[in-house]
Image 1 (cartoon, rainbow, N blue to C red):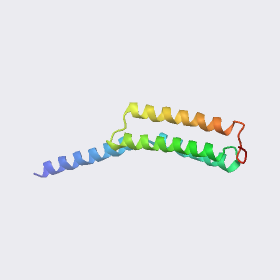
Image 2 (image 1 turned 60 degrees about the horizontal axis):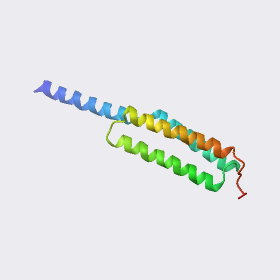
Image 3 (image 1 turned 90 degrees about the vertical axis):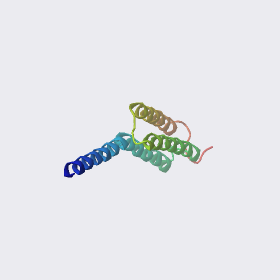
Length: 108
């Protein structure tokens, strides 16, 4: 009986460890934070208009929703990670483009 309790405990611990590991997306989270900072800096400096800032924030929210859906089943697959990275690549490009276009805050 003692051995069955130990085995059950080990199985439970390994399942919890596997679940927590699968839900970690540190690279996605780090890039998300960096992109949020880039958007905030652009809004503060005036290189992003209010409309551009709103659009970029909506794009970040879509990435957040996709990440939450990927984590919902407890496993973030390689395909889901690839999709998240692709979305972040596109968002990064959009941020750069919006910050370096001719539009500035305060002008139409």
